[in-house]
Image (cartoon, rainbow, N blue to C red):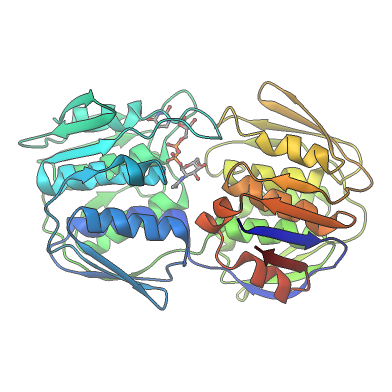
Length: 419
Ligand code: UD1
């Protein structure tokens, strides 16, 4: 099994180019099935999750071919409606096939996702949404089976106990493009990845108003055509490199990063004492000087993103003083705490709060990644830890970070992948 070895103590300097967003590409890939003609998606990152979604598209009868960061999707053969357990268990976003299959084929059979390392992964809002559009949903033998002879527009309130849902908004949005009449999604997700999907669907010919607000209005049954489209830069990858520059007290320019999507992360880093400058070239992050502790509330966009919680924790672990991180989205997303503590961090968990007492130094250790963003946090901690950190279970990392060790190494990190 592969591992990543990081030897701490190097100051990162230079320029890094941010890849296209994984979480924007995945819904756009399924939405390409709604058109009658092929689409080409540009700026697509080479990641295992993208390959898994391409497999989902193949299973549904269409073709998806990635070449030089361009993904060619031809929906011509799209005539199957089952996303099997083998794919959904590898990647939960496979559930986006629910909305696409209902919209184009009137039927969808998708394996239930189940829980994962970051907590329960309910899908009640996805089901509520498609049911309100007229689909009959049954759950049998671990599969969701949804059927609709005709989808009908409706007003749907989509918030759950933790606020809006990205995935449910994506599914309902796609199904609503085929529904007769008007659909209103109240409490829709406003995350940039959902806005990117709205822009993609609009460019294909869909009538949608309110992208980026909590109220989406969709006029259904428009004919959609395939298009060329470029997805937004990955804001989680950008945030991870911003923390890498901060934690090593380096000076890094992030080319292609979208500053407008990074305000919560930039603001938090500035509060801590890091210099963050925005320019037409991208975002420049300069670390150094004395850092101050800071409390972090994890909230839906435009709040501080849950997908950056583990990374900011790695930084705060070495900032003198006490910081409290409150996770309001995924109840179990603190698995990285135990591994950071094995590296010398002093972090205590009290229900949804992590109390981080900054330590003067971390020491390298063999550590185990529990999920995608936790893996990134362990690498960040390794960049400043004394000696070697050996991160295991890096298959999580390959789901969501394109060439992370090459990119960090080009900035001066002592990092390599080992077998
Ligand atoms: C997406 C992202 C993930 C990110 C998350 C929150 C992708 C592929 N994944 O996941 O990286 O961490 O947004 O920003 O884009 N919920 C319900 N019922 C539902 C659905 C969700 O209660 O039917 C709850 C969840 O338990 C969670 C919250 O809503 O507490 C947000 O989940 P959601 O936005 O749906 O996350 P995902 O779309 O799965």
